[in-house]
Image (cartoon, rainbow over all chains, first blue to last red; front, side, top):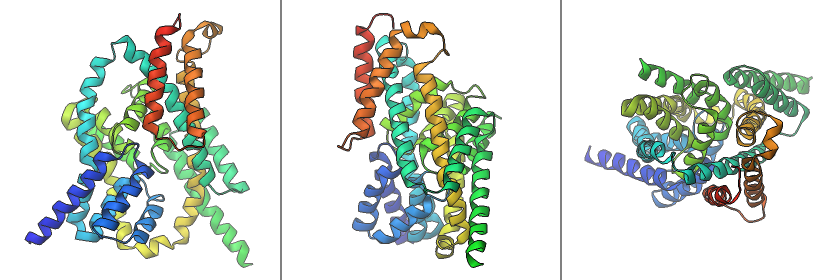
Length: 186
Length: 191
């Protein structure tokens, strides 16, 4: 019992550290997770972690949270999943909570307004960078290009809930791969 | 009531976020801006705050909007909502890991979702570009505004840094953009 509690505490602490020291989220967190969880603690192997990351791409939610839940579950069952997930969320929860009070007060300064004018332009560059890297990762065929164009046009130009775009594209992908599989058999 | 509303809104956002933070901008925008919880400009500002603070974007924005609308309990409800779908789904996946990984259905769904994410981020880029360069909509007077030229200049520098040969961390891009914004803001007349 005591051993189990120690393990849960270790899971919580390790993911707390990962959550507190990775900026930008997502893929930036993976090397740190690998070092802490696979190399130091040996809770899972490096290969298994890579597979988890690949699977996490096909499940909703932030990849770091997915990895924390998975590693926690593998190491100590349901309680482990809770400990790992709480650990990775808590630092950003606490920091944003503290910041949100400060942000409003600072916004009245002229220098802060100018800073955010620059920052917004910088964020646009970051988004375009992400756009290019997701484009490189996407499959390159006619079906894929049609989906890209459809998702872009519908989201940008029509007052449609993006949830329907996501569901629609998932269904298209499923039907297309089923039809393509049938055709290959014949 | 606001607590339940926050929880359900972020539950929906959490359940449909694929392909990392930026792909969820249109979804967050349609939920949060249409309710008047946040303006488009404030959303772009918050993307920068989230890039400069630790933790995943989804968790950060849920905590932020939750605390703005409902204080500490609001932050708790929104964050719980955004995390719950991925928590439950990963638990299910962990049990059936091998079957899930090799499933034809999953790879079929992914062949539609991967390009969809590209389209969604493209739409996010377009809408953010609008709020950066034309914050008050288009008019010919915009070409006389110093703010437009500052934004264009900072964007060009940030893009050159990000697409250069050397790998650069997003936090540095934001710091440099902020410094350029302050410097040019005070230097250029008519901002």
